[in-house]
Image 1 (cartoon, helix red, strand yellow):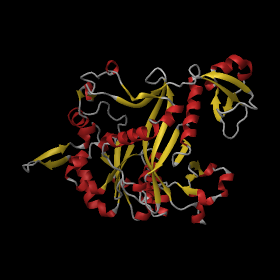
Image 2: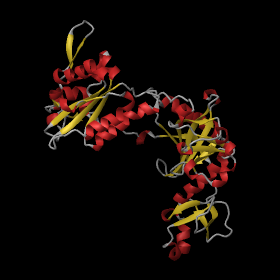
Image 3: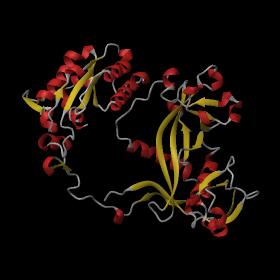
Image 4: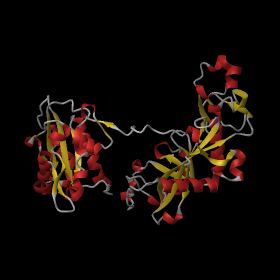
Length: 441
């Protein structure tokens, strides 16, 4: 039987009885604790006072000037202990990695510079997250190690950029720590030559950096290697194990007794009249949708560019009305996709007066908005827009890429369902495989 392994490592702290101090007012260098994270012993000693205190703060290092002090048993206060372990990991890695910061859920995020994939314009970083948790797969404390892809940091500092619109900034790197520019501490801005922008999709075109091209390969083998390499190099070491004593067995292996199988028919899907099939495409073609549209009156219209009218628009209308025909290897024509009425069990009418022909490619969003706003529609009819787009999903120009979302946003605002079809996909022999996604949506 195949061995199932999780990206989780169990550990048991050696020092479990530790003194901590807690203060009532927020202060730099202190972590915030909710009531549910207060150590058990603190409740036992100070319960009357703590009832009315929503937060306490702890720096995990000393107790002078503390409002409350207690020796905490980490096993009896696991949620407090998770804060402590994050503090230990953060402190350990702070001078050993290129970038480190607490992410939005306070897990420890680490960035490692990859020189082989950097350039003169940007430094590329592999991103990892260390998440501490309690008794999720084992009976004790656990460390989850994940790989989160890459990010790029511009090689020019804010000092180098000079006169620059800082409202375009999101994250910046300052001395190996990431900050949101909006909340950048004033004292950190004393040295602008040490502040470098993280390249968001907004900044990339401004600095002449290409967008990342999405890949659709199986990411598991690649991500697994990054995780295993990070574990071997940075976690399975005497130094790290001295503060977080990871189990020598490494990543958690799931016992065979805890591996279950689905039922033989668990992949069956329900279709029309409670019939079943394991194939969404075949099931829809043969059996129809499990539940038809709640709208009895449905009309569709096209949004298109003039050059797409004679080919793309007319062909889509023909496919919806007559079905899509293809030829097999012997050259024999067959119906690869049925007409839309049969497929979704819903009469569908083309509302020609609602069609929108885009006049100016540089003004797509405004033209669509104006046309939708000024079109009179029947209140008892659901409208569906089919946008024939000349812009591919992989388009690297962010302004063009955002057209898709802006058009969608306008249509949603006016209660119009929509589907976008890239005009070049219509030229592909296998276009029948794209069609099922349109009516299903």
